[in-house]
Length: 193
Image 1 (cartoon, one colour):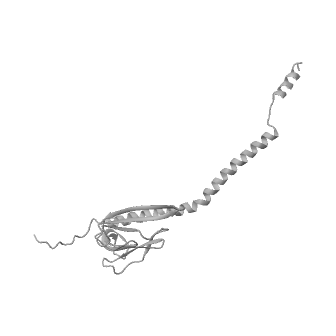
Image 2 (cartoon, one colour):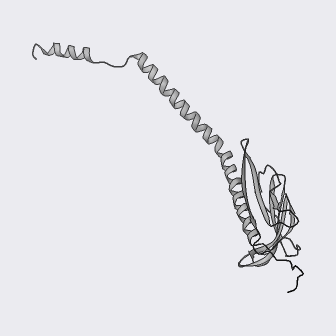
Image 3 (cartoon, one colour):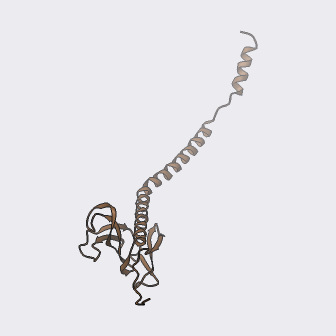
């Protein structure tokens, strides 16, 4: 070994710097705080997911129901019952019979939507309202059962509005749509030409 080697090794040792115990404890503490915060956010998301998923499912169900109602209104011939919580319409549905399964062609049937409490149901019956099938729930979690509005009035509606309102963590969420009857049966005016 050369005479200068022990001096060089000693100089390198003096220049080596590491972390002190206090620096390591501070860094570890900060790391634990960051990991704890991330875990809290993750756990909150996991806890709220079922609630969010059920609200999303209810909104999607209402969106599908709104689309179905407006489609049936556009294909409709006559509104037979009109109130804020109930709509009965003579319309065309793709079914083999009014009380039967689906088909590729449409037939006239009376479709009734009834809303009470937090739910709405749909029933299909013969055009005269007889032989109604089973009521099928089409929406739930409603703020109000008053879904339908009629213009100019409920006696002779030219336009039917549909408005589903839900409460999402205290904030109202509303889906609005509506339609006119395109296949409305014109009443004779009594005039002769």
